[in-house]
Length: 101
Image 1 (cartoon, rainbow, N blue to C red):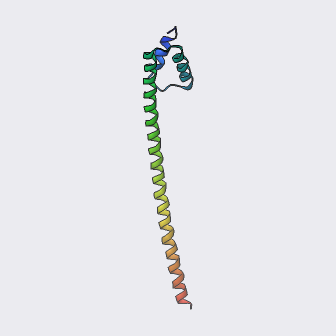
Image 2 (tube, rainbow, N blue to C red; image 1 turned 30 degrees about the vertical axis):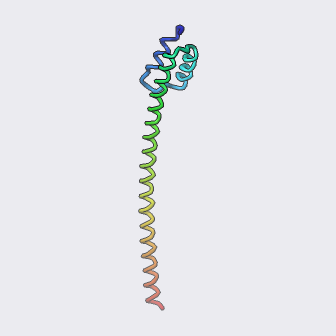
Image 3 (cartoon, rainbow, N blue to C red; image 1 turned 90 degrees about the vertical axis):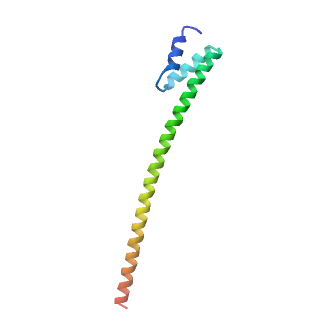
């Protein structure tokens, strides 16, 4: 590997997620060295990043499910209220008809 080896190792060992420009740079650095241990290091980093992405997706999915459940409860509550008010309206109309035949 050439003079970019320290940068390559730095990118692979970076604790945070890689930015788009860093991913492009890493792809270019991988292409410069076809040794198997280099490829294995890159695959390990890709696997770790995939796990992180799946965890973020799971959290976002759980948040959306919770929001949907909360909205469904509100819709159910409003539906029950509408049915009760409709029933009360029908009862009051029936009472009015009984008084004035």
